[in-house]
Amino acid sequence: MYILYGSEVSLYTGKIRAYLNYKQLPFTEVLSTVSVCKKIIRPKTGVTFIPVVKTPSDEYLQDTARIIDYFEAQARANTQADTNTNNLSVVPTTPAQHLVSELFALWGDEWLVIPAMHYRWNKDNFPFIYEEFGQVVTPKAPKFVRAYFGKKLAKKFQGFVPLLGITEKSIPHIEDWYENTVLHYLNEHFATHKYLLGDKPCTGDFGLLGPLYAHLYRDPAPKQLMDKLAPNVADWVKRMNNPSAEQHTSAAVSNDNNPASNPAFLENDEIPPTLLPLLKDMFAQQWPVLKNTSEALADWREKNASNENTSCFIPRTIGQHTFKIGRGETENAEEQRFISSFHQYKLQRVLDVFNSIEQPSLELMSLLDEVGGLEYMQLEVKDRVAFEGNRLVFE
Image (cartoon, rainbow, N blue to C red; front, side):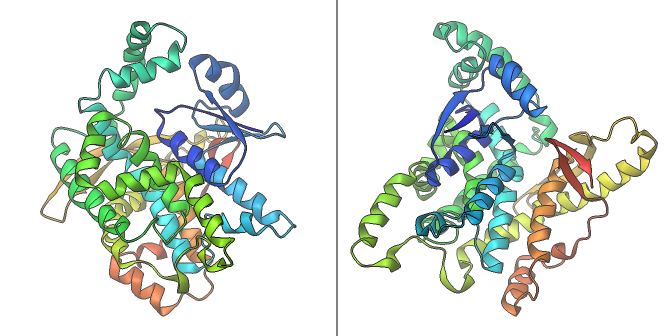
């Protein structure tokens, strides 16, 4: 039995909970209270980030991308031919779909955090949020006590909002972009497709689910917005959180001598045209930030070379840089945000997928050129990062 340490209010817990359910892995969930963090999470992982998954062999897994890697590798290593296990893989085996899946995982994990944090902390989601955070501090206390301590803890998280570049200047552009680009095009896509790449979820779906569930669907104000503007996205969130219904339906049909009904990714490595506007958007807005992050990290290493002997770990933030957000060149805002060194690790994952393709097809190269990503796929990361335990180091 696996143990998931996390919280309903946590963006990344929602992502990995849905994954564990989809993979039909047996687990129990333990609320990551302050006490649990001090007694278990910090001592076992060396960091205070959630979610954390404890395996039956007493391993403690941290970081959702690496947690999914762990389980997918275990499934591949299973020497017994298990059709159901293979069918539940969330990693596409064809080049274009694999790359697009990782692009959406990166976008969801690291860029949709911007609207998620804005709509949680700058909209009317209180006292709901205070009570939710109160569960983490004093889970057994009366409701009014939980709300009191929850407000104190929530204020700390609220302090991260401006660090993400969410300011009075950028907020109108963030809202315009989220409502008229993110929700609009995802709603159009999910009108004709159950998931990003077909009839079963890929890693990109789980990346999207983190912000689109915990913050933008569960919190009262953005939930009303999603239900109104993007009902197909709301339905997708429900599907992602209730995979058993889809799996049972598919199994029943499959048993009726119709193996073709097994949920699968689209054939012939197809990328739905409905995803192209979102791919264009991520390369126009997120990828300049990723490129600059890699350059800034190389500069940071050079400036701090004399200090490497004292601490080999890379700080999670290494200064600030400028970014733009909004719809189009004339409809965006320029702001400052902190530089996250962790984003380079996620950038490397995408570039590694592209570089693993021995001979990219003309179709894939044409697709990347069309969405503005071809040049970015040629990026050379000067100083790659890796994990030592659960902390970043240079390779």
